[in-house]
Picture 1 (cartoon, helix red, strand yellow):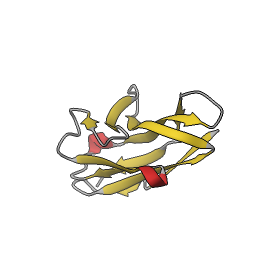
Picture 2 (cartoon, helix red, strand yellow):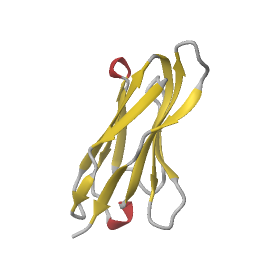
Picture 3 (tube, helix red, strand yellow):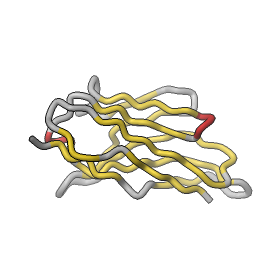
Length: 120
């Protein structure tokens, strides 16, 4: 199967930066889309950014121009660079990948989440 491990969350002041990482491991035959979602207090989970295995990216309107998603296909890793952070970016950030495990079928896999808190 496929396991996702996220890291890089923490407490940061407004205007600061953080980089989140997500590594996929297990018996993986292929990975398609890799995405970051977030869920703030009292909010629904929302898409922050996504990247295809070809490198095409898309972003939520609230993070365009501030966040950058990237990936390394050889390392099954996706990053989210977050600049100019605002208090409203405070949320638990989740990594999601669409992956094909060996001998299995395409499925979505989620990480455990990493907390990002933006506060002075």
